[in-house]
Image (cartoon, rainbow over all chains, first blue to last red; front, top):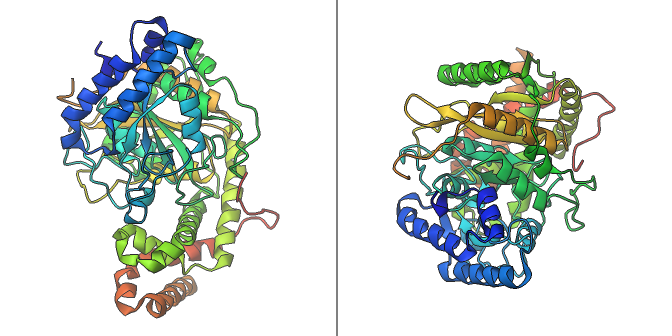
Amino acid sequence: MQQWNLTVAQASSMIRSGELSPVALIESLLERVRRLEPSLKAWVTLDAELALAAARSSEMELKSHGPQGPLHGIPVGIKDIYYTKGIPTTACAPQYASFVPTYDASSVARLKAAGAIILGKAVTTQFAATDPSPTFNPWNPAHTPGGSSSGSAVAVASRMCPAALGSQTVGSTLRPAAYNGIVGFKPTYGRVSKYGIIPLAWSLDTVGILARSVEDAALLLQVMAGHDDQDPSSSTLPVDDYVGAVAKPVTPPRIGLVREFFYEHATEEVRRHTDQVVARLRQAGATVQDVRLPESFHVHEAARNVVFAVEAAVFHQQMFAEDPNSYGPLLRRLIEAGSLIPGVSYLQAQRVRRQFRTEMDALLAEVDVLLTPATPSPAPRDRATTGNPLFQGSWTSCGLPCIAIPSGLSADGMPLGIQLASAPFTEAMVLAAAKWCETTLGVTLMPPGME
Amino acid sequence: MLEEKVHQYIAQALFQQATALYGPERADAIRSYLEQMAAHLWLLSTKPPHREVEPWFFM
């Protein structure tokens, strides 16, 4: 297999056994970046010399002291809203154009401590909001790559790096993952520190992982999960063995299929595809039951939109007052509308979210995971949008861990996926179920012409 | 009918505030978005959670 096509787990194993050098791996990826980046535009900052120097240092350390951690010599992409010490962090916004952090985001620091190498900073939509980025979908450049983690998803799908960090405030990790045919994972709110990430909406923002296998998502989560005193929303609950959960043989999961709402908003093709996927999973031994959504589900979207707008307006208040014209039209109207919402409504919305979470806890006690289509349709043929985050927003709103995995192709050759979600802080369960589904379905996607 | 009036009243209030704060041109530009937001606010006001439920913030 080509070095650029190795997963994190494969590359890590080969680096440890001496079959692969970190320098050779990064050279292979840099060559791929040189070839593909002009047409895909996935990166904001990528300093080849810096990455090569880090790989050389990693190689020397491997020879002298052995592997530093489970990600020794593994290159990763970082969405450009994460602080990276000494590397510009622009949020793809003029306000941060010349900002160079003096420290790493906690999640980045943990990746580096585990031996990972920062390959570069990936394109985000402006401030991780909804104005489309310049990135192209490698499956078809006329279709949106999704957002806001567009660069991270495209870099991983096109094999310019084996894994990348994204973030999810509504649907910004799982949606671009599904649109580009890769795995997207969002842990429970509070499981991974948000310290050092430029916020969009504090009570919704969550670290996201983009990778090409469930095992790789587990590897990155294992390294980043855990309490961080610097993030007030960080959980003190113990960290489970995620890598172990996907390594051992997994029993077929109990799946709750959510047709309500999701099938109403999905295209006929997506509904049919999801039914076919569910039939295969059932045939392979999964228990599948239809589940009904709690009453608060039908109000929570309004609550999430209110919370999102108000928190974005508060974070941007000062910068926006100084230069409103520097904002993209969608973010601008979000801030303007958010600034008008009464405090009473904001608090009412946060109460609705709490009730929704409580009611979802009860539903999730009946099954291992909930299954829905990952998106209402494949990536729309429209670069003026980042697509519809409707299928992620619910689980983000109540902070559940969730994952999108590829499950096939649409009639016009665009990736399709399924989404699984589980109870709060049961990442090991949702990853194990996703691993079982991934193995059962056997779908690995590569964009055309990228082999 | 009453529900429709309340919804319209919320949208109108948002629009008036937007006009005062951002000027009539911007208020017009975001009018449809303000109407969507008014629909959210109206829905929230009609479906309050149980009295005992505290707000979310950090869990």
